[in-house]
Image (cartoon, rainbow, N blue to C red):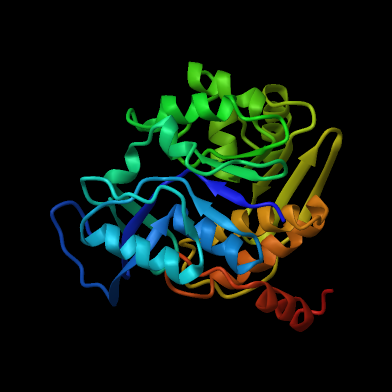
Amino acid sequence: MPKMLHTGQVIIDLVMAVDKLPQIGGDVLAQSAGFEAGGGFNVMAAAVRNGLPVVYLGRHGSGRFGDLARQAMNAEGIHIGITEPAQKDTGLCVALTDASAERSFISYIGAEGEVTEEDLNSVAAEAGDYVYLSGYSLLHEGKAKALLDWTLALPATINVVFDPGPLVESPGSPMMQALLPRIDVWTSNSVEALRFTGAEEIAVALDRLAEHLPNDVLMVVRDGPQGCWIHQRDERRHVPGFAVKAVDSNGAGDAHAGVFVAGLAQGLSAYEAARRANAAAAIAVTRWGPATSPGAAEVDAFFLDSGGA
């Protein structure tokens, strides 16, 4: 069975639900608040819950938030590849979800913003494994070069999954130019794909992505409640979403990404993996919090309830 090696960042989310964001200099009362493991944890939890073994290949801190991060990963059965905590604490993200179910973030990066090639080599990547890269990782001076060099040295039998996130805005940087030819799976939402390519619609974004990526790359672009689009070689398909009442979109994209990779690792076609990922994301948005991906049995039950197979 392949495994996922996640090289992103596990941070702690301070999750707060509000009716609306405050104006500058203003204040609002939250309906709820709590500390939850977040960031890369959400993708890893989704993958593990759907049958894919996961190793966290990022750093974790020595303080209060590092303890919370390790507890959460241990509870999910995520293997912590870099065993020694860093000398500083894990970072924090304030995640605000308003009445529209949209979320806003303010992040502070801690121990997870640094890594060395020695750290990354602490767990062997084996043929068929999926190495998951987050665009956030490429923004950290203490991490980006070591991660890029390590990734480019991986054998071709390792699948590289790239999630650009909202802050990687174009293919033009030297780092992206080096990374793009090594990507095997691209996963993003539509806003990220449009921003990255400068396109105004998903079809054009997929065409432009195909110009930058290898010929056989598998692209999946999420389109909110409408589902997602998958594209590989000359084949493009829309995979419909599921109608649900959303209360919190926080973590839905991560649930989609984790379940999608888990499906691929278990031998599903891209279309079937995307259907399961759409179902998982639909369930996730009906729950409060960041790591709300369902497990495999719950996805199966959702298909039965919705009349699908």
